[in-house]
Amino acid sequence: MDISALTNVTSSYIKNAAEESGHLTVEDRGFEGVLQSAMDMVNEANDLQNKSEEAEMQFMLGYATNTHNLMAIQEKADIALNYTIAVRDKMLESYKEIMNMQI
Image 1: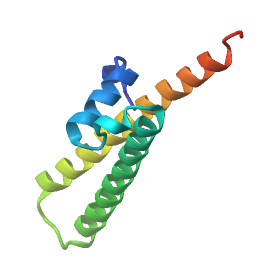
Image 2: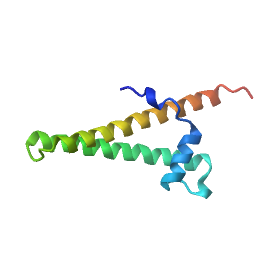
Image 3: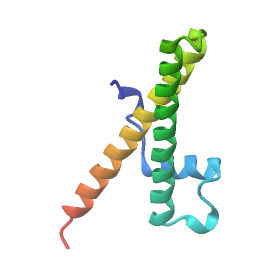
Image 4: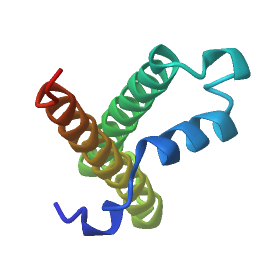
């Protein structure tokens, strides 16, 4: 999986994306709100992966013949998964940085 295009994912980017999508309100500007928004994105990526697998099965069984729709569903799931992986990596990197801070 190539996620090189997602290297500029930062916490401010995640917060802005969450605010724009309506997952994060003005009251939820704390860490809990950002974490919940990230978890919602994980769930959404999981749903898209499940839909992709279902579309593949429908195509293999001959119930669906439109390859364009199949590729669109698969690409959407792939992008969501790559984004989720990038967010996870940034969160782990931040956690490690916080844990290495000296008090």
